[in-house]
Image (cartoon, rainbow, N blue to C red):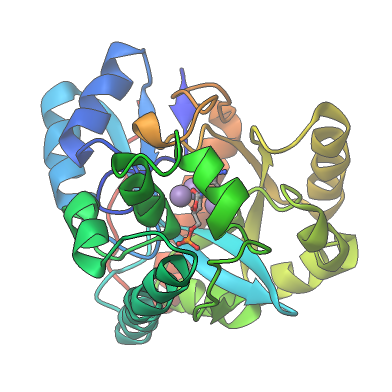
Length: 293
Ligand code: AMP
Ligand code: MN
Ligand code: MN
Ligand code: MN
């Protein structure tokens, strides 16, 4: 069984529709797929319809933009009740922060002599629920300013780049508790993908996050080299946290992140789904049922 628990559609910064994503997953032999767009559940319905047609198991998820001690941390929230008001409001606040950032980003690019306006970015963002730097990058590619998203981040949009603008992100511990209250489970995405988060997210911190309700660590991810994976795997083992692996697929938007390039062990998925059922029961929320193949 092939299980990929972290992917994006064009409802965030992926380049394929939820339906096309599910079809592609089926073509490449994925049995269980999680759709985890940034800060939105907008793609869930279309993905669920496609999954039932294609005979693929869909796990509904969100990759929530969080912060810990000033550093960005991404939290994969699986199977929360999307109608849980505090969660819905917090996602709205994050999306508002994304959209509010656009004028400032465009102003910085214009100050650098690049002729770009907000509509150029909105046009390429298409169906996305919120605008991200990858959409600004796509607009820069379209204008011939850069070759690809990678060059746009390296030259302008990265956190040390001249067109970088901060935005709102949810406090990590609060979000872990909120996901549990929404009847879902949370897994820290690519925790050591970047050096600055490495320091804050040590074993003691994972233990504290587990007390807040964290259930897992995304260990197998392209941003982690082999020694990193081994170290994270041993932390997960020590703390009895679920280990996940996934592609972080973005369609054409990210190279070297093909569907299924990392996968999750079926036993780990089973634990994750069981924990989600327990979470929903404890929180008294109705959450989507996952029928494992
Ligand atoms: P934002 O959410 O608007 O702050 O933008 C961050 C997003 O940009 C992440 O979710 C990544 O998927 C994407 N990203 C970051 N670095 C790169 C890169 N070098 N190439 C392509 N996409 C990137
Ligand atoms: Mn992304
Ligand atoms: Mn991420
Ligand atoms: Mn992602």
